[in-house]
Length: 354
Image (cartoon, rainbow, N blue to C red):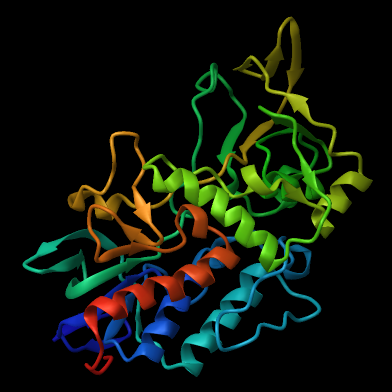
């Protein structure tokens, strides 16, 4: 028997291991259940919710883009509540409703070949499977770019992943770096924020419908299929006019400036001009959290992972969901179904899920 916190799990082989229980992982688990393939979901979190568990308490669920339903169970957001509470509660109810075998906290450290299948190792044990669906997302891999003078800056430097609300920055001038939705959240809340980006931000006036989402996914997929690292979805979609964006606009916070030349001890410098800042928040996005897949040597010379749909070209029984074109709620749902459909065609079905 393999003992993990929260219970005892039979040490049996399964058809498919799903790594990660966020939107993409739960979608995959739902379709695995429907297909009758045996599976287990290994999740590093201490509770349901994926990355949503770690979002700032100040981020209200009602201020987000539309949160797309997981398959088989519509999501109706309550009129109030933080995203860090509301979405994990939805995920918790979803896992229970479909009796999904999610094991946590199980942080997978390495996935390796094991005969004709794969082995996933964690401090709490090892699991073997005929195939792997990886759904580890990006939240645990925040990206902070190198910038001249960062080591000289004497104020507070942090990534958006560590932001916990405006109370920590009362009466402070904050430099917000980045052109995505995370930056908009900060600008809507921080009263003395200055916004800088490398490129002029583009706001998308239309609704982010599922059809529009599919068009965006196709554009990102074209890059991934060639083995290049994926671009962020927002780099293709532009920014939406969410409630947060309108709040930021109403307070005059959407006046973007070009990137500073360098940071110095007390602030930032643009050419000959110096401005003081107390903090810099890097709202510069995330990278795919795939270090545990390194033993499989999936990457191409260009740095990306060549994909055909959700399938990795170098390991056809390893599928990535929530990666590249599926790194969004629309894409994650569709990718979970696509991955399971492809694996069922190869593996068949029959064994009972643990």
